[in-house]
Image 1 (cartoon, rainbow over the protein chains, first blue to last red):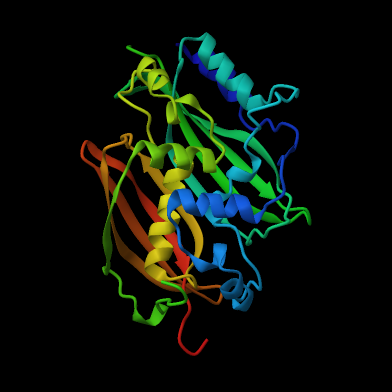
Image 2 (image 1 turned 180 degrees about the vertical axis):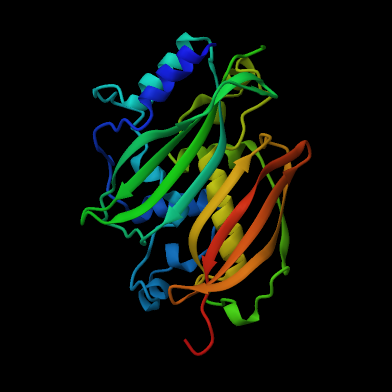
Amino acid sequence: MGQEFYDELKALVGQEGSRLVAVDEVCKPMIRHWCEAMQDGNPLYTDEEYARKSKYGSIIAPPTMLLTWTMPPLWPPKEQPPHPFERFLEKLDKAGFYGILITNVAQKYHRPIFPGDHITFTYKVTDVSPEKKTGLGMGHFVTTTFIFTNQKGETVGTQSLTVLKYRIGF
Amino acid sequence: MAGKSIYWDDVKEGQELPTVTTDITCTTVIAGAIASRDFTPVHHDRDFAKKAGVKDIFLNNATICGFVGKYLTDWTGPEGELKEISFRIQTPCFPGDTMTKTGKVIKKYTEGGQHLVDVEYNFAVPQGRNCGGTGTIALPARGH
């Protein structure tokens, strides 16, 4: 693809969509379910007595659960205007870059997340690479940055995710 | 592990973290995907994964995050406070793989009144490196 296409992609970088709201509050059953799947025995996440005596004074969520609280529901489908990131992916799909693969993940934890917290977030595309030759085919690396906030308006964490959108078989 | 944590004072740069191996099964992959509310079919539907060009379902990125968190705080104990993690995913981890986790302390320092260590880690599977990256953890220090 040419410079013109890349310029069109770059024009979409930095556009922020509306704030998205977690379906559920942070809760102990989801924390315990996560610990069960990860086989994580950290007592801060599941041992009430230990957690109460800790500096947090209560159970906290594993910090790595950051993205889990705000995952979209499987059902019912939510009607909301397409996010700039979705428009970004659609543009790449239309240009033949159908393949998608997560290549890089970075999370920063600013504050502990407690049961009862209600998480919201905003996200935007923060970077797109020129077309590059990769092991899977020609593609663009697209980096998205998420900022997660609790009900007090405090930032609890950030995540950046880089995906490779590539032409399958080229 | 309940309660026991390592002290920043006792950690040395270059120190290796314990090597931990984990056998990955279909249950590991699917339980991790669903616990992280990731319903993308390549993480639970083998037929779908094959049609998408991979040999089987594979670990999703949230489960890798969970494994990184567990690997680091299993080493430090519960008073080790994760500040950040960052990694690159290189090759998928499939059911039937044994994942071998290794790590090393690369930096020990104080900043803003916190006692910090930077570690690097690699999670290997038979076909190559599943993920590799770094993390920063705040540790308790003696006399603080």
